[in-house]
Amino acid sequence: MAKPKKSTSDNRAPSMDDVFNEYYTQVFGFAFKNLKSRSLSEDVVQEVFFVMCQKDLSKIQNIRSYIFQITHHKVIDLLRQRAKNQQLRKEMWNVISEKQQAADQELLEKEYFESLEKAKSCLTPQQKIIFELSRREGLSHRKIAEQLNLSPNTVKNHMVSALKTLREYLQINSDVVISILMSVLLF
Image (tube, rainbow, N blue to C red):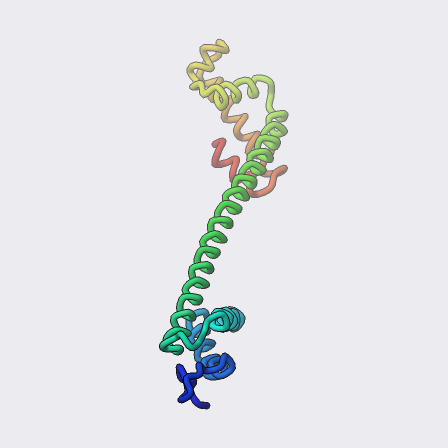
């Protein structure tokens, strides 16, 4: 196929058909090499030749250079757009992942506290009081003993029994994940 020239001997510019036939494969090849997508490459070809249709070919000094300059810019624009979209997608997945983790954590905590409340119903009244003072109030065995007029050993024995009861209840009545979570958080 003959290459289109700027003009023929009678000063006519090459026709758009001639330019399209000559450069279509090269423009597509350049786009495909960079984009690795047949459909995106076809889009680039269409955009390049659309721009060329709007130009007066007789005023273009070097058609080949002009076409590949347009092609280069269209490919770069698409690559920038894809990079921006990939970054946006990555950020979106990070937000979704964080929200899912927060929801999962909230659900685990809810299940944990529900199971803990059920487990505490198995404790004696004295064990409940001592457990609450130790875990919720953060009091030491000595301070609990002073507050309840008990010996520190009695408080310690009640705590050991309470923790054993809670652990056994949770192992029997809770999911494995909750049991592990509780053993880490409680004991």
